[in-house]
Image 1 (cartoon, helix red, strand yellow):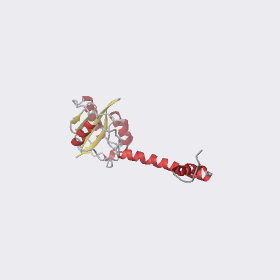
Image 2 (spheres, rainbow, N blue to C red; image 1 turned 45 degrees about the horizontal axis):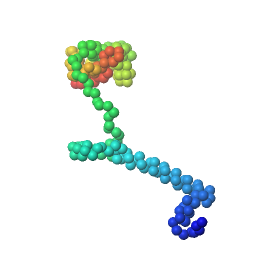
Image 3 (cartoon, rainbow, N blue to C red; image 1 turned 90 degrees about the vertical axis):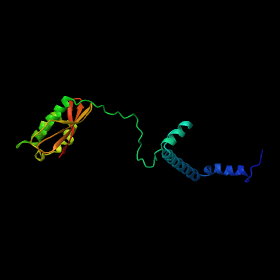
Length: 198
């Protein structure tokens, strides 16, 4: 049986591994230090991987081709991920839907109808059949009909853009022109936005 001495590499290893078992205080200190190291590594590693992009490396041939054609974006300047989960779908152009034009025209006529004695609630009720519930509640309910600067529609809707799901028109009044967006909803065509233009 070999004699254990306090010299050599084996003695140093014995002292290191035996240190935590010498007393409860040594054991507690060792556990705290190991836990702190594990937490520090757990915080540092994801930050390092996130800084590098976290992407799988591209094949050697593809990497050379892509790096020469366009530079990779600097991830330090992007506050969030710009990666798309699905390709964007462009809206399809279409001829203006006659029902959408009619809704825009009726909405504009209800908008300019703010005769004396008409309450804001009555004015909103006139717009309700032609407006989306969301837009009526969030925007139109804040408009005071007394501030509407027109009293009559003076022309037909002029189409600015037309898609299968929305139509944007301009309608002239005896005040400002109205730029109205009509969207297709489950309840039919409804005004989802408007703006005034001189």
